[in-house]
Amino acid sequence: MGRSKTTRRDFLAKVGQGAALAATGGLVWSYLLQQQARATPFALRPPGARYETDFDARCIKCGQCVAACPYDTLSLAAPGDPIPIGTPYFIPRDVPCYMCPDIPCKNACPTGALDPALDDINDSRMGLAVIDIENCLSWQGLRCEICHRDCPLTGKAITVEHHPRKISRHAMFVPIVHSGHCTGCGVCEKACPTEQAAIRVVQPKLVQGKIGEHYRLGWTIDTPITQDFRPEEEPSDGFKTRPGLDYLNQGEL
Amino acid sequence: MPASLGGKLWVWRYPILRRVTQLTVLLLFFGTAHWAWSVAGRPVLAGNLSGSEILGLVPMADPFAVLQIFLTRHLLEPKVLIGAGIVLALYGFLGGRVWCAWVCPINMVTDLAAWLRRRLGIRDAFFVSRNIRYSVLALALVLSVIMGLAAFEWISPISMFHRGLIFGIGLGWTAVLGVFLFDLAILRNGWCGHLCPLGAFYGLVGRVAQVRVGFDRQTCTHCGECAKVCPEPQVLNLHKAAEAGMVASGECTNCGRCIPVCPEESLRFDWRWQIRAGRLQQNHSEPPERRAA
Image (cartoon, rainbow over all chains, first blue to last red; front, side, top):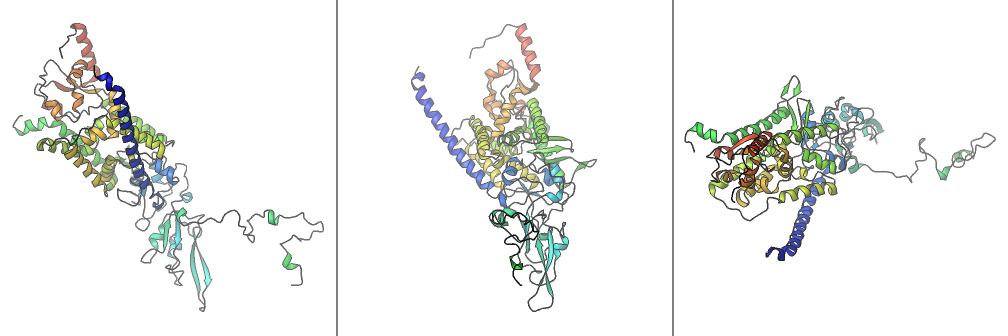
């Protein structure tokens, strides 16, 4: 029949068309995925959330963490929200994370997008609080320090230091955030009394710098001394005459 | 068509039952999420159709979503794997696409579009093979590997809809509207019957389904009423159905629409093993009857 005459050509054409259709569709589809995933750094995730790409891959968008949260902190991103679609997030200025010690949201997660290994809520890193010192009441000289007092890890995540003020005899008491302890729960942002919060929680990678290995803070005790200031053998006479350490005391000062 | 209300309801019994199950599932999710419905302190049905937990005891998960996540090379927790297994077993038994006809909320939208289409006599804009959904399914799996994201879960109008109804829909209604218009004006059963990779996945699961629409060829007059309402009319290939004694294709959604419209009552829900047993008996007792095509 006529079939056998056209089979091969038709078949190859069909295969080519099918492959082209799949490639076109796949490109558009992957573009959509990339656009969605792009918003990931702007989402504050529930405690225990794995790193961005891992979290995005694992989260099945079921909302069980949202249902488990006793404070209604969490939402699932709807299409059109500036957060990757269907994933859980919270806005601290609306409802912060109150850091339940039993971490019900993490326990509800079926996929491990929220790491089951997180045992201590104080070890969670949902974000990092940063202070806009131009609009912080304390940094402007008023006595506020509300963030410091409301912080669940007060004295660790937020401390208050006093600075002398220029001509006044009154000191300034300024809040400082310590990234080593801040969980990013956002209680400070919720509590901040300014019209727009002057302390805000964001993903650390958006604001946090990194000094790098090549700078040495030589005056700090815990900075290891490397090749430039390698300690020599203790002098046999017992005097501490290491180069660069006691040079100020060499002369008659 | 019976004129009395009771008769009409009887004809529409399966669509009505399906609306009831679809809305009940959504309501249980919604009540648990918003009104903290619980029994003995345990949340009734937490989560959504992608992943959930019944009474804090029985996990369930969308096996297609779990497969995609697995393909992003992430090891998943046992809970979600057990959940996916439970759902697979459930639909493997009841009929894979029972999900589509009895649970999936998009089905309410596409059924409405199909009904309006029949009413208004709208013709297809162009021909699209119903097998394209298996290509979409394959593409979803390939993209999950390449992109490191569960590809269909990030664009699925189904998830946007059920997640949205429970947790807030945002602009997700535009995707639902898109599916509705596509089904209404462009292609009959366009989404569910041609494109949806989740339906394709459950179509493959449904190949082993035990609940099937049984077919009695002795009474069938080939009037074609069943194919008019069927969302997957290719499964009502009456030659194949006569051979198997049932609608054997996994693409059948067990929606039950064909059963009440059959004037000869040649179609009914039945168990696959009983149909098989009946066939065997028949084959033993009477010589196989060859029918001229």
